[in-house]
Amino acid sequence: MDNDPEAWRVRRMQPADQPAVGRVLAEAFADIYAPVVGQDRELAAAIAAIFPPDLTCYVGERAGEICGAAFLTFSALQSTVGWAEERAMWRVLRSRQSVGRAVLSRILLSLPATASRADRITSYVSSFAVRPAWQGQGLGSALLRQFEATSCDAGKTRIALHVTDTNWKARRLYERHGFQALRLEHSLFTQQIWGFRGLIYMIKYLPEASTDNAL
Image (tube, rainbow, N blue to C red; front, side, top):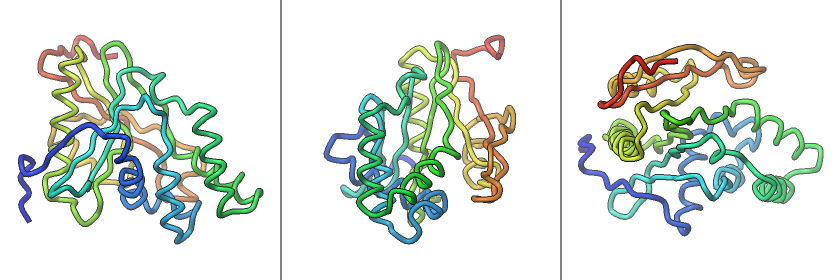
């Protein structure tokens, strides 16, 4: 397959795309959803399709098929899960699970999550997902280029993200695009459940930025 990023179309998600985005996220993060849903891929996709409406989601597609997606935020408030999302998630979990199991599932889903680090100068990328069958074909690079251009247009001077400390493939992609690992942020119980100790916080300074802006 062609691994040229230019071969992909990257655009903002439309409301009708949300179920497809859920399927992409569920497939790309199948190991994260497994302790919650087991082999129930439909439940994983339904959960993944629930996110705040003000989140800006971009999708990457080829021949009309959505093969990757990720979120870009410019404010920490954009990623806040509200009551509407919590109620929707509870309804989805209860459609397939008992009350006790649904409570446990919601707790598990919260453990690997991290808050947006977007601020006045920083945009933040989250849930960066490419379906396994399309990884290594340039889609990840196409999404990152879109995010960098959009962040520059928004006046941001750097872009940030998190990656698990065991996801070396994704980390190498980010490093090729100029991201630097700043620190490892340890997470509670994730090593016992998912096998990773924590999340690596990475940033990239955009062309107009100066490292004098570093925290």
